[in-house]
Length: 132
Image (cartoon, rainbow, N blue to C red; front, side, top):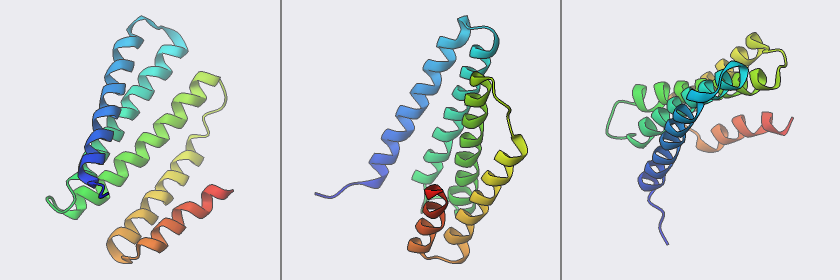
């Protein structure tokens, strides 16, 4: 059975976008830290859905939009997710560390997607740090 990547991406965009809307609507009644955290998570999901949408347009739009911008939006959404979770838990934000890690991840992804076009190396470069 063949899997149509564009369809899978479209379903991910739809699911993530709807979850962002649900969170935004649901958090109108929340105040304080919980509301701020959930709204931040909703924004992160919106950015993530936009990034996945751009990924789905690969081949139809310029690589700078479908790779560089898409990766940047996805990485930014992950950074905002970390911030939202740490805000909710009431622990230190460690913003500089999160920014540095996300920036490095974004640059590595773009390097392997635009310069060193080796998918295997790209997957390894992003998987090995996850082991630690």
